[in-house]
Image (tube, rainbow, N blue to C red; front, side, top):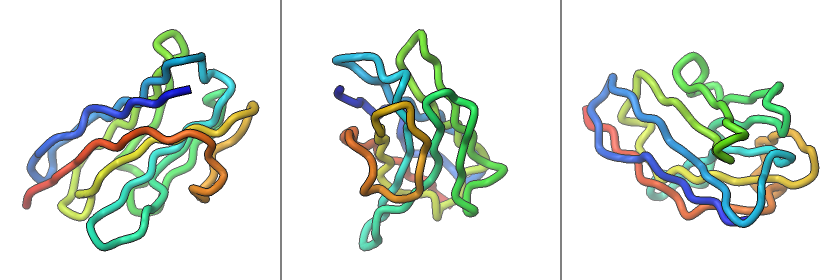
Length: 124
């Protein structure tokens, strides 16, 4: 499966963006999906994840209450709605998928597929 992340851009603090992660090659309805981000000079960090069923979600403490993850099975897409953006949210955002009727996890090492990343820049 190939993942395509999109929706990044340059916004001001307090604005919103919606990132999309679209799968091609096969349906990933049985895959958990996670969003990670990496800022310059920093390690990749977990942002949010959703289980294969959509029934379980995870969020990093830094984004709880501001970001919402969801999935649209018909469009083979997972979304990350980001509200009240802050300059510290600036990073390249990556989506990742984990096979096998699975649940999202904070550990990037357990994901099987990765998208190419989309840049999010939040100015103050």
